[in-house]
Image 1: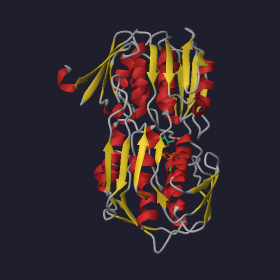
Image 2 (image 1 turned 120 degrees about the vertical axis):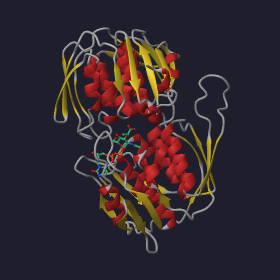
Image 3 (image 1 turned 90 degrees about the vertical axis):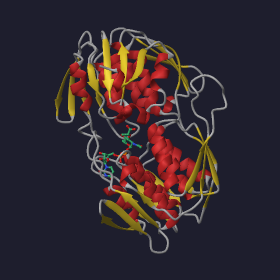
Length: 436
Ligand code: EPZ
């Protein structure tokens, strides 16, 4: 297993290219199962969750080809993907794949809509909490799918064709992103109209809806809590460019702020980050839009404490919570973070405290008492975004920070250490055996 070794103290300065969105790429790759012909996707990031999804749809009968990036040199990001369904025999998403990546569940809707049957290993919990799929199943059942559980798998069948209807899709913690996408995909090929009330509004839902519409689907209201989907008989393969990864962009904004640096972010869609910009401006971070999708980020030396509660989009995203917490460890006063989406998503607290932070958890709330400095330490990554928070803390900590199990980082960030090195961070990847 690899580790990061970070020597803190360098100011981040320069230009970073934001990759395509992981959380948009995964459901769009699953939706390719519904396409007749060859789909071409641009800006699909090279990271392990995307590789897992490519493996899964390959097992489900797709041929997938990754082309090299057109531009030579640089960090070799992007490069288009060609996806084509070759056979529809295999409809099983096995435990080996699903256990490493919960998002595998988003093949359920496309398989039921296109092939009328699906078998997906029930995703277990993960480091950030339980990951139920009751809302996915309830929505698909309302369209006519029938489910049973068998040896840890959910087995779904459709007698005839799915049938559209009006339904409420929300849950106790608000809307479900992948649940909305699963039901949206299924409804796209159902008979008649489906109205989804309580739909998730995340940009990744909108991007997937735009992808389906480019294939011939009739989806309206995407990006709002009420979506109208008129079912069609078939979907033709298309060419699509994935939206920028707003979570990676938020992570780099905080990298600039925590090191009191200055960063130009390219391929950054500020409209997808209004709540993040709002909180960071209150902390003392400055943003200057420089042309389409280019943003210049600097910060004051003194950081103000803030309150933040994670919310469904357009609220502050839970996926940037750990990164903001790392920044607030150095604010001049006490901050409060409340986690409304995944109340247990605080595994980074213990590790940050080992670096000298003063964070106290009270249920789904963390109180962060600002300190003058963080100290480098050996810490352990636990989940994707907690790991990103530890990297950010390491950039500013005094001395050396070693972060173990960074396979968590590789799931959701494309060439993170290369991008950070290119803007002055002293970070290197070492394999476990090389580290004492
Ligand atoms: C997506 O997960 C993202 N993953 C997550 O990002 C993100 O944290 C999450 O949305 C919330 O924004 C991908 O897009 C691949 P949800 P998803 O269904 O769709 C509850 C990352 O770091 N719920 O919107 O699985 C659930 O427990 C990952 O990139 C039910 O109760 O999340 C949670 O409290 C981590 N029943 C809330 O809803 C269900 O059937 C929101 O979950 C489904 C969800």
